[in-house]
Amino acid sequence: MIKQSEVLIRLQAVCNDLRKISKNKELRYNDIEGRKGNIEEKKEALKNAEEELKAFQMKIDGKELDLKGFEDDINKSRIQLNQIKTNKEYSAVQNDIKLKEADKSRLEDDILKMMTELESKRANIKDCKEDVTKAENELNEEKKSIDDDINKMDLEMKEIETKRDGLMETLDKHSRYHFERLIKNKNGIAVAEVLNNACQSCFFTVTPQIINMLMGDNEVVNCHSCGRILYINSEEYVYQK
Ligand SMILES: [Zn+2]
Image 1 (cartoon, helix red, strand yellow):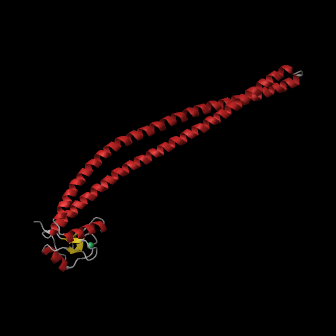
Image 2: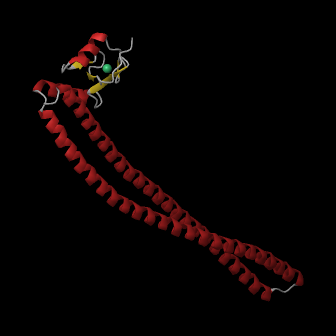
Image 3: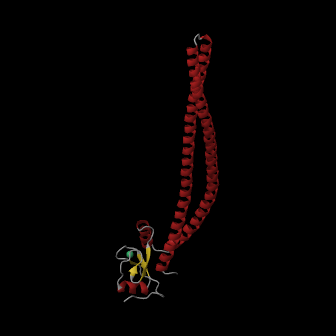
């Protein structure tokens, strides 16, 4: 039969393994959450780009309406030309038409430039959409791989838990209760090694009597400061004077 202190040390190692796996599981889940957040950001960027495109298109529509107005004005002035009697009036209207045509031409240039910009905005939206789809596909792939990993980790945990329960059964009722309470209340660490005359969990200095007790037998000794169960590697332990 193994010594009680040996069982406690092994139990602590098993609990450490369980904790490590839990932590890894959490990290894998966090990875998914991170990716989801990233996709949401990409969708937001897409939405903004689409709204911007809509506003820009409306701006172009407005300019096209202005252009139509210029054209109508120019046509009206041309009809007016036919009804004019004096040369002076004729050249004034003709001049006015020239000015309006210059304005119209500038507006056409503007619209053309804006159309080019519109195309680049559309291309940008296409890129954004592809970006979202790609990230979503990656997330799905990752989810599958994470599910596989989580399943493996769950199996591993089950095995370790069986081992833990087996070890627990070899403890008497009191030690078992004590160990479980420490695991729960002391951040998952119930058992601490003594090195250089100090508890390695809280670094409280341990008295020579306690070291003697730990070197001696099966007795369970708790740290006077943190309350954890102490152990010593008695074959290698060197007492510091
Ligand atoms: Zn301690």
